[in-house]
Amino acid sequence: MSQRVPQTSLIFHDSAAIISSLQPIEHGPLAGNLVSGSFRTSVSIWDVIGSKKLLTKFQCNEKAEKNSTVLWTHSSTRQPDELIVQTREGILHRWKLSQSAANFLCMTSTGSQLSFCPAVALEEPNLLCVPSGEVAAQTSGVGLISHHDFSPVGLLLPDESTVTLGSPTRMVQVAAHQLLVAYENADLFLWDVRSPSRPVLTSEVIKSSRDPEKEDDVTPLALDFDVERGIAVVGNASGVVKRFKLGPAEMTALDMLTLPDSGVAAVRVRPDGKILTVACWDFTARVFSWKNLKPLAVLDLHKETVQCVEYMEMGGDNCVVLGGKDAMISVWPLY
Image 1 (tube, rainbow, N blue to C red):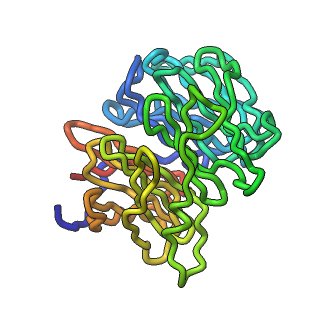
Image 2 (image 1 turned 45 degrees about the horizontal axis):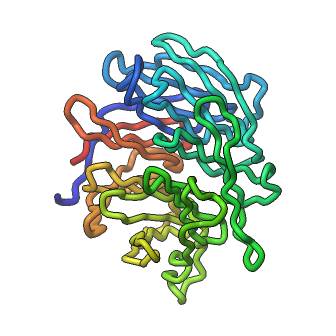
Image 3 (image 1 turned 45 degrees about the vertical axis):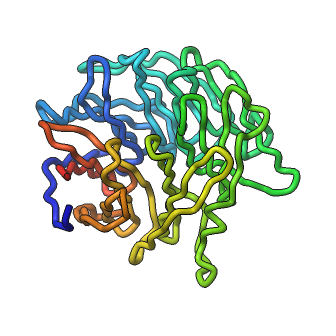
C-alpha cells in the first residue's frame, strides 16, 4: 500500500453543529445506516447506501443545554431496533427506532456529571460500562449497568490509597468479560467484570514510554484495541500515538509516532487489522499501516477538528467515516 491522496465519496452536513459520535448500524431494520450524535443531545440517522439523505433526527432532551453532547450510541444484536444514547451529563437514554421515527422508551442517570468518556457495551454478559463517579463517591469509578433494564449490577472501583487516578478518559473491551480503562493520570487498569473487586492488571506503560526530553500531556484521549493481535493503541493531546502489547501478566510498550503539529481526538483500528486511522486536531485524519505504522494517507477535507472515526462497507468498498466539529460527516473509500 503506497501513500496517496484519497477522494471522499459522500458528505453529510448536520445542522445541529459538531459531530461528537458515529456508529454504523449493523443489525435490525436500519442495518447499513449511520448514527451520529451532536450538541443538545441531538441524534441523526443517515441513509448512506440508498437515498444518501437524513432519515430521522431527534433530541433525547429538548431542554438540554448546548454542551450536553452525545458521547456514544449503541444498538445491540439482542435488541437491534433499539438505540442507547449516552450524553455528557451522565444520562443513558433508550429509543425505539423505525425507518421514519424514533420513540422514547426510558432513561437513567449513570451517576457521573460532565463526563467525556464514552460508555462500552459488553455483549456477552449484556452489560453497559459507564463512568459513575458520583455513585462511587470516587471520580475513577466505572459502573456496570444491565443492558436490559438499566439496573445497576456492580462497580469497578480502583484503590486510590497511594495514587489519584482521576476520571476514566477512555475504555475499550479486550475480551468477552474484560475491560481496559485509561484514567486521567495515564494509568491503565484491566478489569474482569465477573470479579469487580480488584483489577486483573495495572500498568504505567503509557507514562514509562514517554519522551523524557518532552513535557508531553500523557492523559489518554483516544484508545482502541486489536483483539486478534492483543495490541492496544492510545493517543494524547501532544499528538503522540503509542502501541503496547497486552499480555497475561503485563503490558509492554511496542512503538510510537508523533504527529507533526496536532493533538489526537480518536484512534480506530480497522477490524481486518490492515489500517489505523487517527483523528487529529489539525482538521485532518491520518491513515497508517497497522502492521508497522507507516503513513499511508492524509484525509484533508474538514474545516475544524476531526472528532470521531468509524469504518463501514459501502457498495463493496471499505470506507473510513469521519465526523468533525464543522458539522460534517465525510466518507472515504480506502484500501
